[in-house]
Amino acid sequence: MRRPRVLLADDHEILVDGLRSVLEPQYEVVGTALDGRALLEAAAKLLPDIIVLDIGMPQLNGLDAARQLKRTMPKVKLIFLTVNKDPYIVGEAFRAGASAFLLKQSAALELTDAIQQVTKGGSYVTPRVSEGLTNISLRSPEDRENAPEPTPRQREVIQLLAEGRSMKAVADALHITARTVAEHKYNVMELLQLKSNSDLIKYAIKHGLISLQS
Image 1 (tube, rainbow, N blue to C red):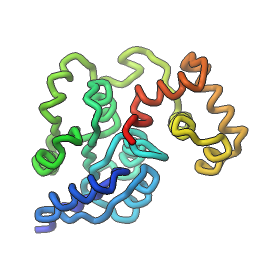
Image 2: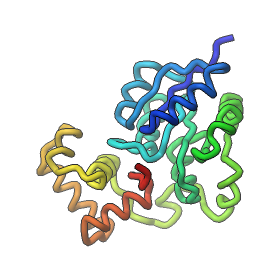
Image 3: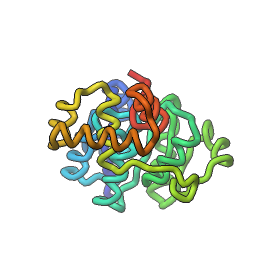
């Protein structure tokens, strides 16, 4: 019987190495990625059955990477790792296509159980955050609060700017002009009623686009 193929994505190599050692006796670990864009490339090339991914990855966060993966690989199972216990982030992960949600602190103990659940068509949420889900809706954002939502491209621009990149660096990364980056930035700030770069960074942190973890 073929072993499930697993791709690991996290910008902390020590964690990736630890998870690989946990999984390899039972699963085929086909590769690793250290940022969200590398994850998209690796997934397209390696065609894994399961992707274990961090939410707070550089260049492209796990939530937006997941949305792109689910469009191109709808059958892939996504297992999110994070240090963030915020029920809002849990909800966003499942709206993005997650099958499981784990805290990094307990990932080594719970990951194999989570994979077993998702390969059977189920889902898994670490008990350390599941109690908080009773107070949050998993409905789509527009149904939840009628809150304004940036476009996928705007979210990419927000993340890269919040990571401290210049407009030129963002333009180079996204293969667009610096003028287009500026238009996206100011359209987002008007949409979300943000007044400063500091507000933009706070929004990116709150919505899981960037992580406070180094």
